[in-house]
Picture 1 (cartoon, protein in one colour):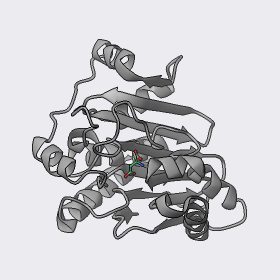
Picture 2: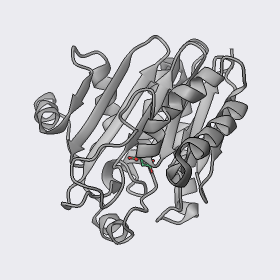
Picture 3: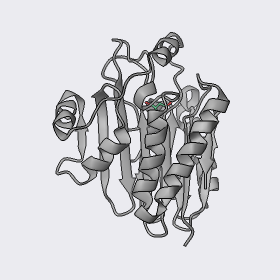
Picture 4: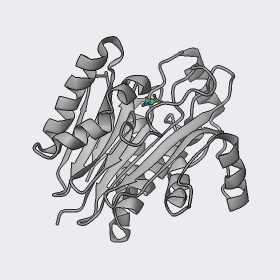
Length: 267
Ligand code: ASP
């Protein structure tokens, strides 16, 4: 069975140069793929962790701020065995991929806000150092804050999707997007796994990751991604902007986006 991984670094025009983003994406794919003996969960979490720690993307240390000047992160993991975890509105900059991985085996795998922050401090997680330069530049750009990160992987048996983000810059404090919502930002079943990026409100309204997953019953991942973008545009008109990546249980991959850029890497 073919083991594979595909990752994205967010849909839209990036703040960092494409050269920098491509370098991070390439490193993330390599590091993720090295985990293949440990399985799809470790493959996708490692790739996302590398991107979160880079400071170049809108997740982890490069996360953008909401309109009260604070960062609140979202993220999720979905596995083909039915396990899921999610983080919503977590204050500060974190490796949310690692937090979601830990939550998978917890009694309460979906957590939010300040209570989660206290739990993490108790568990020994450390906040990442924020990338202040990114904050300033991105905040001035208003809503334009691409750089959400995601990965989907297949290890020959299990499929996994991971998505994490700082959300959208300048939005109302407490807003959450699609990235922490299973069935919208991340989905997985025995057929495939999907991770989405773009305008979260639109992605949630069209339940984009679940929609793509259903199409994969009868289509390859590439076709399913292309059809999903059409649905996003048809359903949501002005705000149907984004992209997605997908993988199936044959190790085939796909991606599609309707923005200027969506850096991807795969192996
Ligand atoms: N989907 C993310 C959100 O709305 C942002 C993005 O992917 O660019 O929070």
